[in-house]
Amino acid sequence: MGVYALDTTHSPKRGVNVYSLEGKSGVHLYHATDGKWYVSDTEDMVAGNAGGWFVSATASPSPLGLKWKY
Image (cartoon, helix red, strand yellow):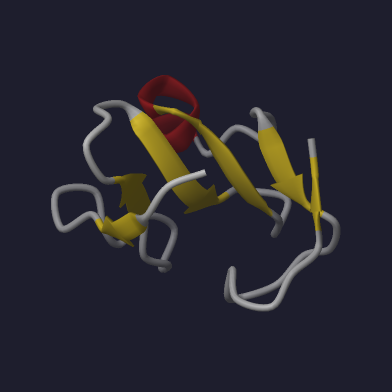
């Protein structure tokens, strides 16, 4: 899946840091308006859309230690 690093351009969004896929522009790990974490494109990340390619199984303040759905 790759390495996600802190995105200082977009962080924080909705009070939480955004992480972007290293070496690939426009792919972000972000906290959406429903409290879950998503991997999606820049448009979804900026809007806080609850949708993307991957989603955490539960809401959480951190993306660490979560189960994921695709």
